[in-house]
Length: 126
Image (cartoon, rainbow, N blue to C red; front, side, top):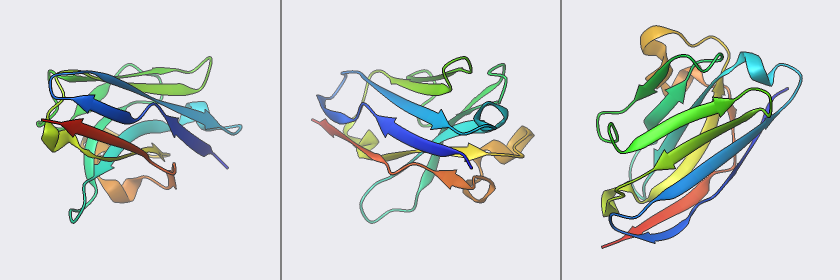
């Protein structure tokens, strides 16, 4: 069974940067697509970014394109979300998630992910 542990959240001013990391453990961790979702207070959890199991394909929500970058290191079983030009509306709990069967448009679908981390808080002040 894959397990995920996020780190790197915190408080940052608008236009600043943060780097989130997710460590994946488990025998089959490198065969899963990995994604980041976020949930702001009173809102539904939403897709942010995802990377294929080989790391060759990346996917982003329109709201973060050009500002966030997702990457993975299968040698170390980690996925990183580099967040630049942060905005107050990026404030949320960010979750790392693993998808065993993602392809194409399925990367952005919350229900395709069956393993979740505990979440890390990101707060962007104006």
